[in-house]
Amino acid sequence: MSWKRSMPFRAEGKARDAAGRIFKSKIDGGVWACAIQFLKFGIVGLSNTVIGYFIYVAALAGFRAADIFPGIDIYIAQFIMFLLSVLWSFYWNNKAVFKTGEGEERNLAAALLKTYAAYAFTSLFLSELLLHLWVGILGISEYLSPIINLLITVPLNFIIQKFWAFRGKTDRSKGCGIDD
Image (cartoon, rainbow, N blue to C red; front, side):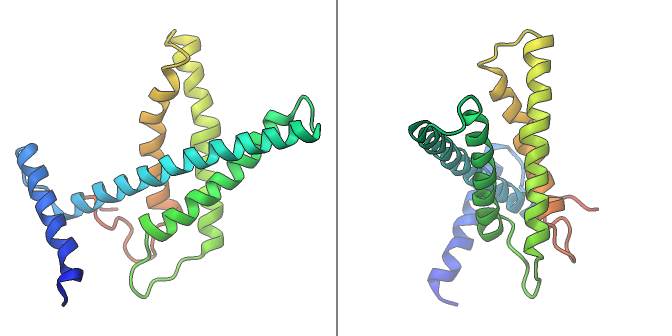
């Protein structure tokens, strides 16, 4: 084994040990792997948010410049943003976050449909419901409420993606200290 291939494992072990010292406990390898996976998921999500915003702005500007879809242009731009940003997210989650195991194959069409369903649930349905709860019922600021939503929808979306959309046939939990 070359030093280049073994170096990330040593660095990961050192980072896990340092985190263990900070939290005053030894962090299990499976839990550590899940934490790294969640971090990667967050990075993909952040890039997804930025890409989605630019897609929305470009679509809206294009519609307005061409004077098409007046009155509904924001909704069509939002829909295009949703379709393309979820596709972006799916690509990177499939490639970098929820990789298949050795010898394992993934039905990409099924995983993509599940990804769209998961995002539709968390981003379209649940976020709206929570927004109504925070702003309409509890009186929390409409500027703070979307941030509170993220504290619920991001971990939930991670769980849905990991254990449903990208779940392998043989190893359901792939770490995280969770057994089915």
